[in-house]
Length: 457
Image 1: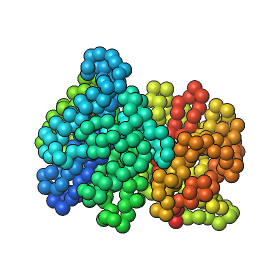
Image 2: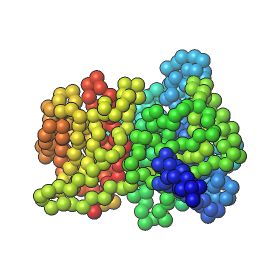
Image 3: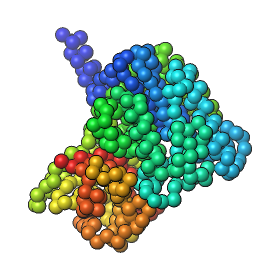
Image 4: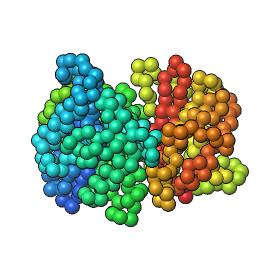
């Protein structure tokens, strides 16, 4: 009897110590020969460190696998200096670095067993794609790369060589890939990742799939996370350890899937990562940090809201989500977090957003939000991409790159609570919304929530 009780206590300990195992069954992502697996990587190397287990398991099942790199990772200046052992700011040199990284991915993926014709590069600007998603649509001058200083896809091997750095270009490429390949499962970067390109790839994918509803069977979506402050710890090659869900995303409603790697798969993953020499030389231990006994996948649940009648507001409260920490050196504990609570509601034909701050709104302490609406009735390129900044001087509104004189966006404050009221008409009367919030304090660390998806019932 004592042995049975001891076993029960030990199992309870395991569930409490490793909650991701309780929320998602081990190897719960089932892969068969009928699957068509699409890997979407923001930069060359994300496909290996984030999804190596999936690639190997899919190929073993004789499933179709296609790998797509969103950018060529051409703006990583520190790694360029270390790898090339020289300092340069000539734009051609950064394109050269993008070509180096493209070749590394080709070698690594071919080593894994992916056929060269199933590896695609889109060539969009490293560190610029979230700017494109929120600003560069319609009749505007295309975005210019941070270091490359080019405004169009400039890699001859890219899928759409010469197209401008604009939202329409990226969305068209992703939709074409999905229509041509018809994936059953898509693995994509996470909306809670702190890297901007990782976030924007998820956002473009969401819009592409909404545009394609009814034109193909909906694929399953499995986001993988790479960049989170102080995760995973410890750094370096520790194959005996597993990846646990990040603390900053605990209790967020994400259903985590923990996929175990066999010893053979783990050995192959380490060998594949070794091909990315341009990144390893700058930070030798970092990429191998993801050579662990498992890989993690999971997405936030969609926020579903009904339009409420005038009267008492029912909030969709996300207070249990710890916000993403953008400044890892300055911020060391939760007490410094000044955006601990964000909640949403829909009432009086307005989107309501409630922020519970740890300080009162002042000139140098406020909040800002991105609110991007979607409806199948209007081409997404023509939909508003709204950015709103609120401080004690008032409300400042921008649609893409244009500042607006808007009087019907309102806010009210009481102590540390700020409630922002945004008319749905300003958002294009959407039925779906992509949104995130952040603070912009002066001389304080910056908080930023993950991008979330809202469905208006």
